[in-house]
Amino acid sequence: MYNILLTDDEQIVIDTLTLILNRNFQDEVKIFTALSGAKALETVRSEKIDIIFMDIHMPGINGLETISLVKQLNPNVVIVILSAYDQFQYAQEAINLGAYKYLTKPVNRNLIIQTVRNCMNLVDTNRGAFSNNLELHEKLNFVSSIVESDFIYSCIFSNSATDFSSYLDYFEIQNNSYFMCCIELPGLEQDKRYDAYMKVRDILTSKGRCIIGSFMTNRVGAFFPINDDEILDKNDDFIKEKMGLLHSLLSQSLSSKIRIGVSQIESDIQQASQVYNNALTALNSTSVSGGISFYTDTIIQNHENAQNKRIQELSTRIINRIKVADAGSVSQLINEYIALLYDVYSNQMDILKNKLIELIFKVRMCTTEIVSDYTNEAFDKAFSILSSTNDREAIERYISSRCLECVTAIASVQANKTNPIIQKACEYIEENIDKDISLDQLADHLGVSNFYLSKLFKDEKGDNYISYVTELRLEKARKLLGDDSLIIKEITSMVGYKDQNYFSKLFKQRYGLSPSEYRETLNK
Image (cartoon, rainbow, N blue to C red; front, side, top):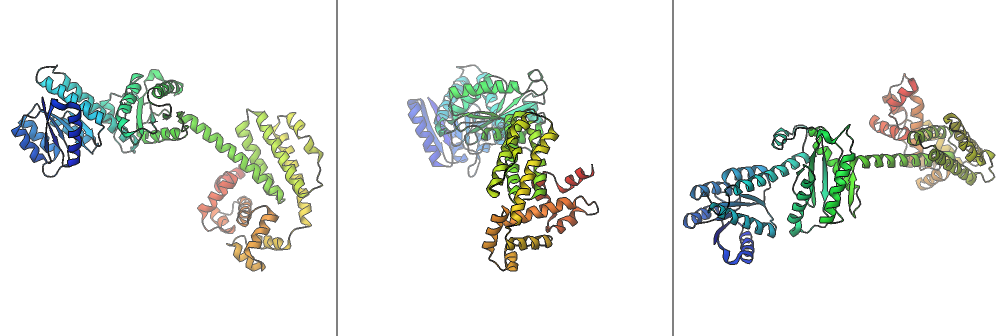
């Protein structure tokens, strides 16, 4: 028979624990209850209590103070802390006072049952039935798991001032290199969290050294120190092999939908927070149906996606500027487009040439839409000409010539049918480019509605009013940057912007360089 004292200032907690104990231990236990530390002390004085479940925060004497006094009355009593506060300092103080276990609310029923069994074994040990080393073993395991959780928490929320030295000493981590991962168990039910967590711990630690945090919602963070003999020149192939194996084991044991995000290798512990965020980035790129992703692969893929998006954007802008016969912008955009293609596909000439052939076909198509009788045999030879040479200058001349020929053809047609309202609008904008000209102001000046004027711009210029004016301002700014006597602040004002930072942002979006960087290229 084991006498168990349940101490908590919430009656519902006592009732829940009582129900669990009565159902699972029946005649093995006799239960006593107390709603305060003072009442618990009275019970310990009057009854021979073997096991105590104790809350920390209670009115009057708190749980930690009560533990200290109880241990003076009964040094052999086994105390389990039951608290809503998962903080290392509380756990450490409780252990120092003689507590056996520190559980955080809400507690899984299976964990309560297993804890009671362990406490009974410890009571038996104190009675001389088991080895005297059992209590020490249990305490060491308990303290280690608390420190691990606290370390992972510190990694996630660290900054440049965070001191990791005590953790590194405790875990005897001597090498600098490490990586982190974030494991997600989707759809995990509350009453299965403890069992799932223990399986995660068992599997991860079975394949090497790692430090594992506690559950945060349905995710677990882990820190993997790397030995010198595991890595050469920061090659991460061994990480992919190791984590791939762990993912397979976790999927077989827990769920096929388990997801893992793995960071890059890092050597600076102060970067732990960023490293964990990188693991999250990799996790978020993983399929919702399960899988594993690596941050290094994610970065490469994101970079490739961004480059392909930029290629598509430049292609669209070239077509739009050809439609309005903007020769200056077309030349600039073609240079940017070809330079980007060579940056991305310099070792894949077939893909590069296919992109250029696609552009040429689009250029001819948009030209024939405006100039119905347009013909140019040079377009028909695009495939054979581009296939026959890898000379970059020759390729650039061919593409630029075809595009500018189309600009000339479209300009010739548009010169005979430009809407007089749009012509006056463009003249007014160019004369007042240094001013803030709204669509409403321009419409009033021309004596038309803003709706009609907006539609005319779209039809005639292939762009909305704001985009047209912005393009005009930036193109003028680009030309003014060639005049070294003008500072960038003056140029900002001359093209109608009041905020230099906003102007610089737009310029970089348009040309890929800041105004000062662009000016430097002109002076080389």
